[in-house]
View 1 (tube, helix red, strand yellow):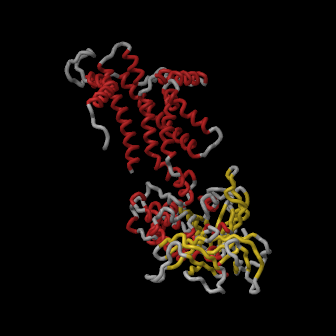
View 2 (cartoon, each protein chain N blue to C red; view 1 turned 45 degrees about the horizontal axis):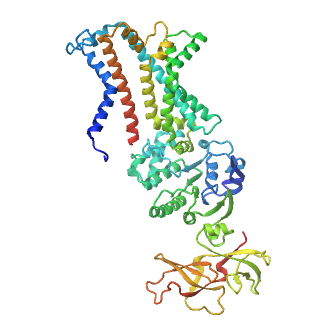
View 3 (cartoon, each protein chain N blue to C red; view 1 turned 135 degrees about the vertical axis):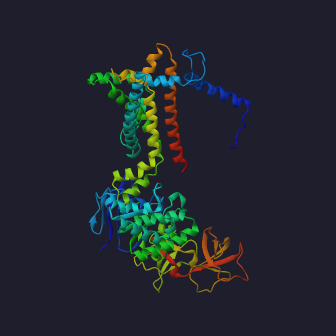
Length: 262
Length: 364
């Protein structure tokens, strides 16, 4: 690649930037392997806290709840988000299209506190018992727009004549969508799913508003334990969470990139 | 009975009129061409036949059956798209099989039909490739095979050769003619390229501003254009303005023109021209003769001028002769012999002439 060389200035600014971004997390990861019970004192390498984690039933329960919520809400958000994206790109300039586009994107910039509070009020008003399902619905609501944005960017570049060709060859619009459009936008749909999964996994604010007894997510559990003091166990749990999120984001990036390279 | 019929078809997009009260018939086994500049409505006409657009008024029939409300996937019409629209995630054979699978034909028959199509377009070795591993010409043939696989009543081709280079385009033209003759399928081609239309079509409909200006064989379109637009759109032409001055004893029309002292004499079958009517005489460049020495006194339609431009094309040489009035007359000459003793040079004083039956009188 052509371009400037790595001068000491570039190296320094890069190092500073990355340190700013990742040093805190690195420290967390390192201390999760700390043998000492004291969080800030290094007592040698050990994986004992990961073992202890498995014994910590409340924490494990919370993790299980979180994964289930993330999976179901991401699946639902993917279906709804894809449909929204298709409607917004395909069906021409229907009246109020700009408004709809805005409305789909708005939750992305909406303060989470407000989304959480609004959802809480809704659930109370319709008398829905708060717990697993309310968190799931809330997460679907706020991750849907991310899926829609990703899928829409893919659909905008999609050659409309492919769908027409499928219909011309005898496929109903629905069949044309499933046999031609969907396989071609699949990378964006998968990327959208993984992003929705990640967002749901680490959400604290909205989950706190919409959860009820018996449904505590991992971020909520970690947060409440930290208020009583950080334990190396929490470091281990957080490290696993970081790992999961990194994995999902990497997969999403790879899926989109591989398809783009074709 | 015509196979396809447009009856008083109008298509509006908001305020814009794409097709304007158009009536047209296409017959079975015909190689029909819709020719016109971009935006003339030819693509809209084709999309109405395929079912992607519905007429605002009028009706489209196929085999006498009204197509109104019949969706694209239920019409016995297939289309080859300008971009080819091959499915990038499917192999060549899966692309060709796609339409047959929609019909739910038995697996064996689909395989047989795909093999037949691959043979037809000579792509057997490419069956398992993906579209992005093919050349432009091969992709074009896959698109053709895919559209023909369902044995449509009508094959629509949208600028079928537009994306090919010149050499390949010529070859493909003849392949399409050959294919159409062998299969007997009715072909409707949309193009803006007059050469393409002239080479391939049995009949051409020339379109302009959503209307059909003339429907005729390529020969008639070229030799007897009905309007100035057609004369200028199809091939090169010289337009000489003038007005009708009367008839000669032999029944030829005399046209008074500011370009010459003598009236032009034109042999035109039109009997209805009134004296004094403003007309244009259209003469094709290859029908104008160049005289290095003054022609015999009896020669009709002689104009004097000087050589302004010479364009050597190899097989032909194109000359532009400047008349005293400043008008330029284009003419072309076949380079039939390799050596010419006294070639015509720039600024030579020359005469041009054309026979009475070389000109066409246009009133519109």
